[in-house]
Length: 144
Image 1 (cartoon, rainbow, N blue to C red):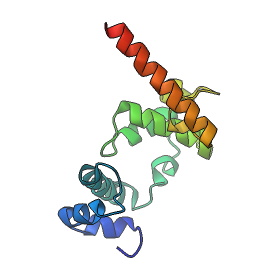
Image 2: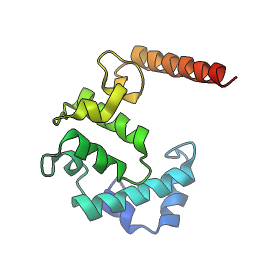
Image 3: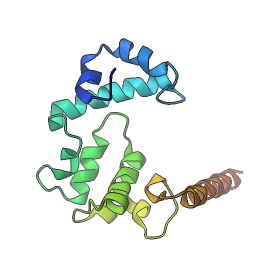
Image 4: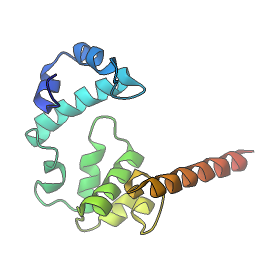
């Protein structure tokens, strides 16, 4: 593609982008489905934010609840992923509109190690993985 460009991605036929995305180095371990999401996301950002992803949080000075709503409208973003992104924006990029912590829920907790929003080093990545492993084990034990 000669560089990563949102307009080039959106202009490319989706199946052509998929083919490009699954070649090594693939964009994801599930390259085909992720390529379709990236393609749809490129269109969404072009159509709704003039091709500028930062307008998701900068356009019109949204509240935390509005930011969460905008993120949930992105292709491939459900409630949990949207909350994690709001937390990541607040914790790591200082994007903190009024109510961002409430919108992000527990993912915004200071000192938590719940998600990618908390990863800033190899050590914190290990802590997030340990948290997730423990949460998965607890859910499995509760299901029995």
